[in-house]
Image (cartoon, rainbow, N blue to C red; front, side, top):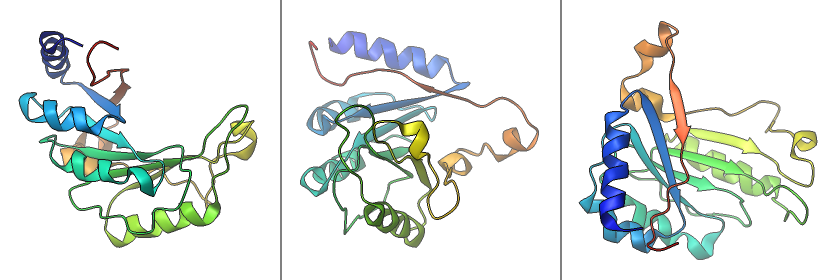
Length: 179
């Protein structure tokens, strides 16, 4: 993507302040390059995918971005993440792979991640177990759903309290050029 196009997209997202935009990338090196040059209004969140310990370096790269909300998408979680440093991370989402050929996600990996989130006071969202039929496997973990979100960091408690609309919008924005 041409830098001018990316700046225009960020400007449009900033103007649509009533939406929360969640940008997710695996290309954390590109994020380091572009992150400081972009206007990260509080409604633009940034996250990185971390599937296993081999790509845990993406978390450090994410910390360099001056966004109001930085999140991890541990989807699909394909191995344990034994030592997560969640400093300056505002939200963790965990989920299994779904569809034909879905790889296994072990319960102990999810529980270990949840415990690290609780210990480090980071909201934890468990999306799904995954598998060939994700609706059949569901999203209960230890008998309950985990739907924590970082909304309290944005001062949105009053908006929710008075039952106003809060729109969470995900957009397929890539942070790499030409693809």
